[in-house]
Length: 242
Image 1 (cartoon, rainbow, N blue to C red):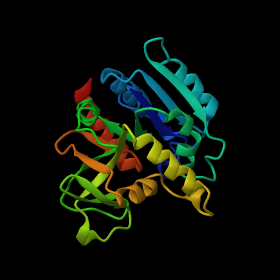
Image 2: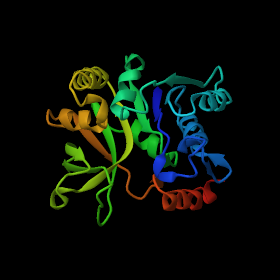
Image 3: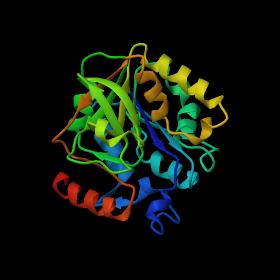
């Protein structure tokens, strides 16, 4: 199984910590965020990882080279448009990596190994989006609407009264899923605003066709690192991980 990490951005909301390094290279306990991601994916049986990079690409390439091994390939994929494009552009850059089954992981999501294991063991579906639930959601959450395990919508601007979960930034594509996703990414990138949107807008469109299932990981440990308080929470979380 292959994984694609979307790690091209700088992480400006964590400034000044990210003035000279992307946020995936910030220390979270004894390791960087991307170290935790790569080591966790390896422990879950992932054998090939393509990492989309952009900001401080040479620093990223040098760091990733430490993880690359014959039994665990870690390959950088440079996105030259990272300053002007959102992560749909990173997916477009990585589309050649999407010929078979794969897992997409946001570059700022920290997660325990039980999460990808549960996603990889989920019932077969073209696309599976990993979700969690909480009592209330804010405007920055990537909110979802799902019904009986089928995703109906995903986005930050969904009406709060309809929301019943959030995406954690991990999706699995199997069977026809890779082709459906690549076709949608390519179609959206041809629109005037294509480079300015999140890749989950492609998932939102595909959800309308009923091909996206959900995998609930409530009770398992994860966190998105966007702001300084998120980094503090992430560092507290990994203390128990060793």
